[in-house]
Image (cartoon, rainbow, N blue to C red; front, side, top):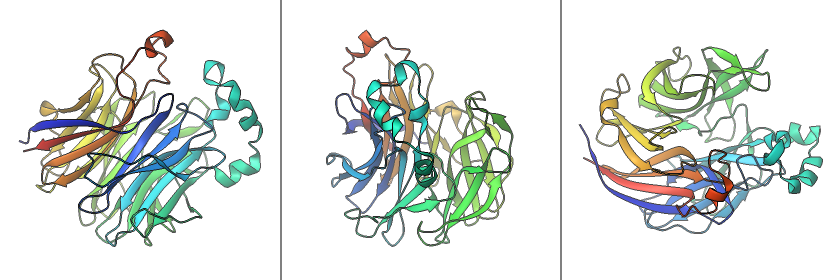
Length: 365
């Protein structure tokens, strides 16, 4: 059994009165890391843009955020992946949910921006996108590549060199959890199937899958596991689905004993699988749990507390992790107090805890 020790904490990106959320993380080489994030005013915001931050010292320090993509709509949930040849793939999606905000969440300065949103703009921009870099993230494609489906987590690399991506996809009625693959490092995508499972009607009256935000990990050539967050009115436990045919077909998602969401999966060099996730009940924090048998069971008797908020729990979570050296884990996640109705405004003004994209480094041995 592995235990965690030697925790070190840091800040990747933070600005007063600004929100950073839903990070991605990838390793470029032995010293360089890239983190992607969505910079914005609030959880749903017309000024949401994709930014990246670079570290040249394995996550000890970070350069200032650099804009990578900024459309007229809300650009969010950016993720990063490094291909074997060094190509970087960034995925994100656009949203117009800021046009549907009411009450205190609809800021007066948004009115002009909302007035410019047209049906044609929605048709052209509401989509998931990928951008690629062929020089370590210094320059990127200027025209994004359209994806047939979208979700929080980015695609996963398989041993045959392909990318697999699970996300919401239009169906004859409502949405389903679709499966797409790319065989050219994220330039073009082909829908290859869907994950079975129950669907529910969301608050907008749309039929959508109970299995929601997810991450995929290849545990052996052709054998994959996926961890899913469930729909807001469903269980708060992670659900798991398996594929034995390289992602062509998937088992019915079943509930795991892991309470929290959403998940990120990482195969450690020593063999076990690390599942990191947000824990949005007391004690609020970032947690992780290990599997020593390729995801058949999870050691929930020995949950790792990666980070914890003893007071004033924020809008937080969405951890992603890399292994810097054998047993040395770097996890990044987000924290924001801007959209926390459970914290009175007068209390929010007094909070001095760090917010933005945060990091935790620790050792497993």
